[in-house]
Structures are given as structure tokens and as C-alpha cells.
Amino acid sequence: MDPRLQAKLAFAIIVLVAVGLLATSTFKTIPAGHVGVATLFGQAQPAPYNEGMHFPVNPLYKWSLFDARQKTHQEQAEVPSQDQLTTTLDVSVQYRIDGQMAPKILRNTGTVRDAIAVHLVPLLRSALREQGKSIKRAEDFFLEETQQKIQVSLNDTLKEELQPKGIEVQAVLLRDIRLPMFITKAIERKKEREQEVERQKAELERFKTEQEQKVAQAEAELQAAQSEASQRVMLADAQAYEIQKINEAVASNPAYIQLQALEALKAISKDPSSKIYFISSDSPMPLPLMHMGEAGSPLKR
Image 1: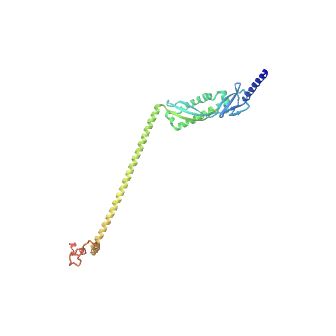
Image 2: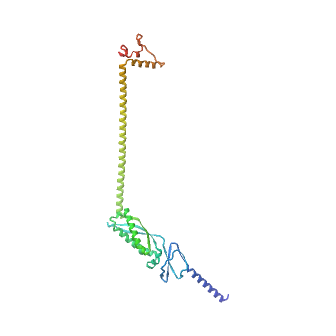
Image 3: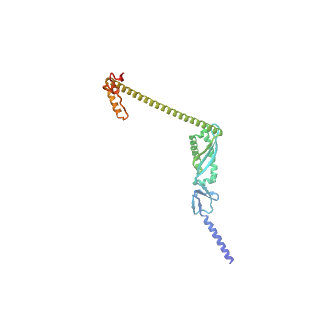
């Protein structure tokens, strides 16, 4: 091949590669959830680039990406209370970077990690120590109202201080509270005593209920016995009254015995095995039952 033709071909290839590189450098794609900040000769551009494709862009730009998605920072701090005891608090801060302030963050602080280390962490530790100054006793950290107060105060403080610096605080959560060991053991012993007292109260209530049931049962049995005794007295009175009336009827009417004797004879006569004995054949009423009530009957003797 002609050397001049080879030189022209090489030059054309170089030009095409350069044009291709130049063309691709005028496109910029920002990943989802991120913000891009362009710098030209060390100067950050004032407007950030949101997620998506951007064209055309200056091929001389250098890019810094900021993750604008929600993140969680966990911090552990030793917090002294008014009783000069130190309690360990584990705190989680949910936050995100304000994408529109990414150029300012890059100029003033640097990366997202730098912003968290410079602004959020020192402020959070200081705010936690300040919260401890309002707590009288270390064990008060376990009170629900104390925990709520700490979370609200930290949330308000961090939002107010970090918002101008491009960090949006979403929430502050207390993850764990660890008191000094001797206080923890004292609380455990106190809880055990309280549980024992509650157990004894429950046992006392159970015993009291059982005794009340026994008393109620005894009262019911007494009432039943009294009712049964009253019924027996009434029945005995009725039987005595009946006997009395029969005696009065017999005393006033001797023929009543003879009538009863006739009824008895009727009943005896129906039995095939029964026999009738005659006591005296001279008596107008020879059967002994028939002489009942007579003045000369053997039963009157």
C-alpha cells in the first residue's frame, strides 16, 4: 500500500476516535437517587445535575456524585446525668442529603462522608451530653416520658442546625440504653421484689376468694338445713293435728271404729289366705273388730 495512503488512513482513524471520545464526553448519566456536581478547573458549578441523562455537557467537566437517598447513622455516646453517673445511649439518626445544596456541600465540606463527620457527628454527641444535664437520676432514662423528651429535643436540634448545611434529618431514635452495672443489678432486684409482692397479692386474693366461697357454701347449707327443719316441724305439726282430730272423732263417735273395722274386714276378705276367727258366738257382733267401741268388748278391758 502507498505510504501516503496509509498515513491518511491512520489520520482518519485518529480523527474518528477523537470525535467519538469528544461526542461521548458531551453526555452524562446520573444514577438514580444521586445528584451530580460538575467542576471546571476546580470551580464547582452552582446548579446540580439530577438523576438521568444530560446532554450536552462540557466535556471538560469533572464530576462528583452525591447519594441523596435516605441513610441511617448510628452513634453511641456516654451521657452523664445529674447524679454523676454515666449512661450509654445508642442513637440512630435517619437523614438524607439535600441534592440542591450538593454544590455548597462540595465547596464547604467535601463528600457526603465528610459532611456527616464534620457536621452531624459532633453536633449529635454534644446534644446528647446536653440532654443528660436535665436528667436527675440515671434510672430516669428508662422512663417513657424521658425517652420521648430526648428524641424530640434531639430531632429539633439536629434539624435546626443541619438543614442550612444541606443535611435533612428525618428522625432520631433511641435504640438502646445501658445504665451502670450496679444500677442495673439494683433495678433487677427491685423488679424481683415487686414481682414477689404481686405474687403474694395474687395468692392472698385467691385465698380470700376461696374463704368467701366456703362462707357462702356454709350459709347456703345452713339455710337449707333450717328450711328442712322447718318443713319437718310443719309435717310433725300436721301429723299431730291429724292424730288429734282422729282421737277427737273417735271419742265423740264410737261408730267410727266399727266403720273402720268393717272396712278392714272387707280388705281381709279379698285375700284368699285370710281366715276369720269368731270369739263369742253369743255376741251379736261375733268378730272382735266389730266389738270395738262396745262397753263389754274384750278390747275395752
